[in-house]
Amino acid sequence: MVDWITGFEKMGTAGIALLMFVENVFPPIPSELIMPLAGFSAARGDLNLAAVIIAGSIGSLLGAVLWYYIGKKIGAQRLKRWAMTHGRWLTLSPREVDQACGWFNRQGGKAVFIGRLIPAVRTLISVPAGIAGMPLAPFLLYSAAGTVLWTTLLAVAGYFLESQYDKVAGWVNPVSNVIIGVLVLGYLYRVATFRRRETSS
Image 1 (spheres, rainbow, N blue to C red):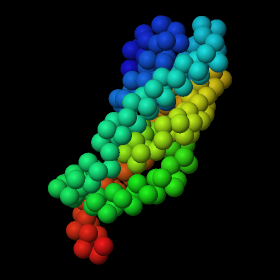
Image 2 (cartoon, helix red, strand yellow; image 1 turned 30 degrees about the horizontal axis):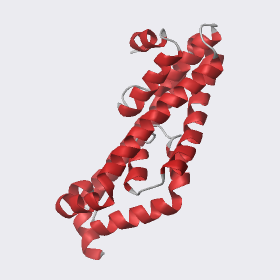
Image 3 (spheres, rainbow, N blue to C red; image 1 turned 90 degrees about the vertical axis):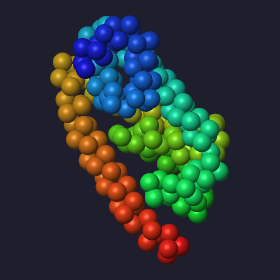
Image 4 (cartoon, helix red, strand yellow; image 1 turned 180 degrees about the horizontal axis):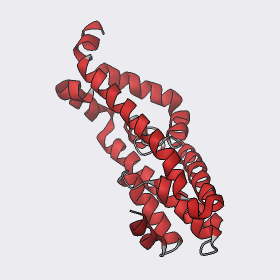
């Protein structure tokens, strides 16, 4: 993985932007390794740190916008139709879709900003924003704020750790695994209790 990322980063800031875009579209490619390695390259003098952060942020934001439009294409009405026929596996009823969209319309800005800072949630948060019909301008604003902060933290960590940049992934990956585990357990719980929740509503 490191050799593959390094090959792209030899393309300079364009390679970093491309990697961060792909990382948002295909999450198994870790930003926790891409940006610290780019920061290490900046520490060696091969790249400029500010340019690395800007390129990484642009690529990441473009990936978020792609998922936002996928969510927008799905839309709340289509999701409600899916919930009527596949509610158990979506773990949503049509009523809960309406509730979720209402909550997102009230808290969308904070949800997007915080979501962009959480490993494993960073990509997913763009989809409900699109489904709930969050306007593009605030989505871009809050998403950009969270994205720039995240990429800056990773790049600066790699810059100061230099050849030990891979320690960043070593710190963040366990957190990502815990979050993924919690999400999976939460999903399984909602599947198991779906009928009970639907009956009580």
